[in-house]
Amino acid sequence: MESAYQQMIDAHHGILYKIGRSFTSNESDFKDLYQEMLIQLWQSFDRFKGNSKRSTWMYRVALNTAMTFSKKQQKYQTEEASEATLSTISDDPFTEREYQKDQQDQINRLYQAINMLKKEERAIVLLHMEGKQYDEISEIIGITTSNVGVKLLRSKKKLLQLMQTK
Image 1 (cartoon, rainbow, N blue to C red):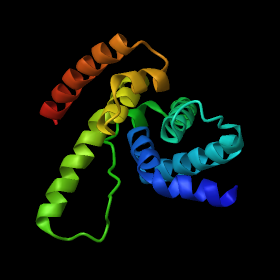
Image 2: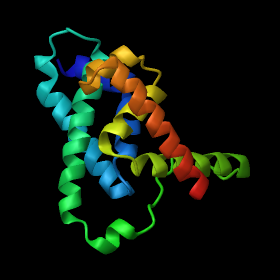
Image 3: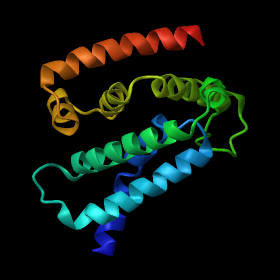
């Protein structure tokens, strides 16, 4: 079981990374959330029944964990902390080339903007960025397929506004 779990995590590491990055604003919280997602996936690993794709199940567990984590974090935030500028999490801290730094800055700005969306909007945008179809997003989030399209369109408009104001 341990080997199958590790293979699943290795194959779908990007899912956890993207969700963790979108629901946290600093590296310390990211590490805490990432660890919590791994724990929740391990605890529920043997309950996966195969009614959906393994990646769909992983998204659901990881998103639910991230939303719960986010609620807990909000309880502990002070007003000053919520107004502070979001720090960035570097994908590759050893990269020194200017081109890569510029790309990383753009990615960080995008994730900061995604972090400003409502939790459900964040989840939908992340799933869409992952290339999921509306019906699969619908299954993961638990809303209708047409509602996915509406929420995605609204979320894209919000992201565009947020990116233009930064």
